[in-house]
Length: 129
Image 1 (cartoon, rainbow, N blue to C red):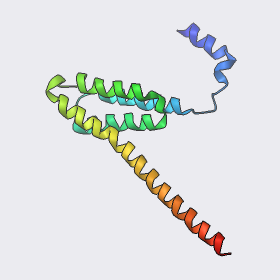
Image 2: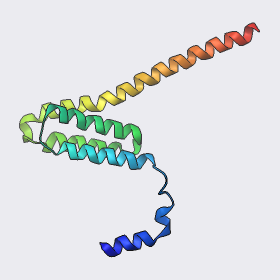
Image 3: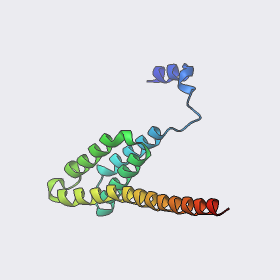
Image 4: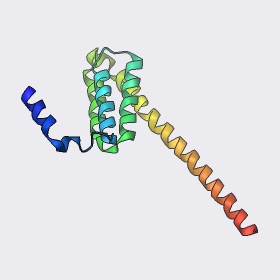
């Protein structure tokens, strides 16, 4: 492992993107944090937080939709308490997943409405002059 780390440090191609964060790096970190939460001791807040982290990870980079789904399935099936709490884990995690998506689409809808309103008011102003 030490030799591999040394060789990786010597490879200049690994430093091309060292100054930049790409969305898939942040999304992967969020998904792994969701996985860490998913397999811990169960609580309603933890289930909701697992779904929220998966939802925010999906919004950050849509290419990890499958990883988010796997995290939620693992949380529902393998979480603490096994099958006794399956429905509660699945429902709360799904609710947590839907929350950031709903907030995002609600804000996008408001922004679109404001943009249309501003566009219409600017168009009226241009016609009158």
